[in-house]
Image (cartoon, rainbow, N blue to C red):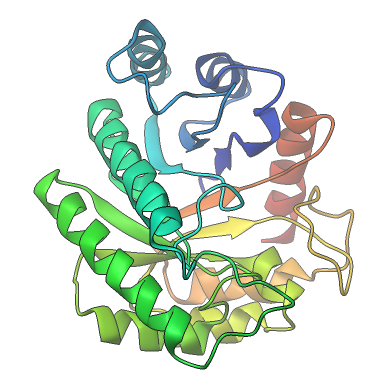
Length: 268
């Protein structure tokens, strides 16, 4: 059976509201959406606003579902040694959890913050900070009927499959799943098929985008050097029943999302 690809609104963040982006994507046959909750695209601080209601109604009108709600990782850092920074981030993720519940999403995506490239912390320090934040967020999410999706991220404290596995065991919360981003994995030299296998019991969403070797990109499928055939075969062989989401950041996000879906369909 052909994969029913979902799509991320990341590429629309500067040129369309979330409701407008989802309407355009729905017109192209997409029914599964992942939302970037960032101004001016979507305001997580405006709880229950007319924009929130319009978005919820738009998803329903399309016969679609909201896979997950994401925050921009560059703006919210769960890996800071500064308590006021982590408290700001935890508060923002808390509002995202409440927004997800309002919009009918099952998930909120989180990452392990970002490490400062020039200030290497003593091993274990940032890991402790992030793990504590994740436990707090997981407990808040559980109280709201929401699950967390932990994403592999090149600049995070837990960037690869092995460290994510360790983190999941450490947190001990059963409402933390994984979104595995293929381009993020390639950016740190991890074989996506290996990473997916290592986390196979926890991966519920897979992000697909292309990239050139040695670069961190979310380019249209077919424009970079990632070979998607073994990745798609892994998805097929595992009978993956989660969501596979196309995440493209480009100047033409709508056309490139549609073209990427077409390209992927020819590979499997």
